[in-house]
Image (cartoon, rainbow over all chains, first blue to last red; front, side, top):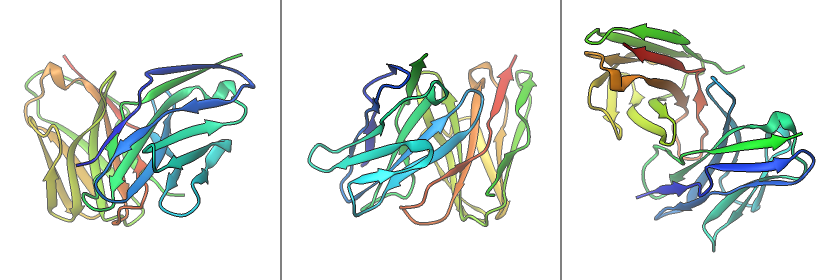
Length: 114
Length: 113
């Protein structure tokens, strides 16, 4: 079975400060991990993914994520937040040893204050 | 540019009506998905299709059915709409393979009155 958790419903950060949105996962095989962003009244947009290799993955709009196997985490980060980064962020996982249907977290609302 | 298109952005239907939500993708993807999104519940999978005429139930299939007669089109059907089906519906597609990302449509906000 596969599962993913986003422990924070909301993250608040001041513009210019670094941001972190947390994600932890559980799989039986190798994890394939994804981050998506959703702006109001829109569908989800793909940001980045971890498949294998380097634990630090770089994606769109200056976002990056760090894969940590021992902590089963895949936190999304950005060195300097913008007000326009305010959106809903979803982490998703696929189990390399099982289903090819992704499981999504419940989402974290990121609010960047001017 | 890749594209997943949902037929309506906003829809208002009456209780008991049969409702069709259409989704078309132009990327020749094998997999297509229907999710509903509700505040605090995230995305919940309704149905999944991995090929033409093939489908699998997701987490919440009750009250819904799907049709995939052509590779590019995946339809979600509410047999008899109810007020608890008021939600945002998201269609997505992806290539086969576990390391592939999904592409989403813009969503259909359905209100059942």
